[in-house]
Image 1 (spheres, rainbow, N blue to C red):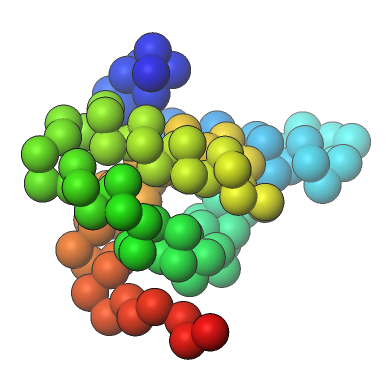
Image 2 (image 1 turned 180 degrees about the vertical axis):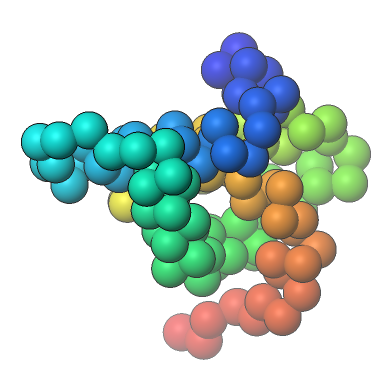
Length: 116
């Protein structure tokens, strides 16, 4: 929770750079990237993975239960836990905060459970 608390106060650009740095590292790039490149890579990843984030968060009963009652740090921590248990979400705390800044109402507006 302490990690989430320290990240909440960062700007979107700082959060995107952290996500981009992790993605850059995972891709095995040998050369350093510019801050602009890191932010661009993070934005592209976030756009491509928003449907997965939506599926993980929008129907989650924990998020539903605390969504309107919890502060940003508590909600971000809960979403980060969900992302940490899912495959393919680097730096779950950063992604959780970026998703919350998009807004759960906006993110989940057209969400429907997948049919079995």
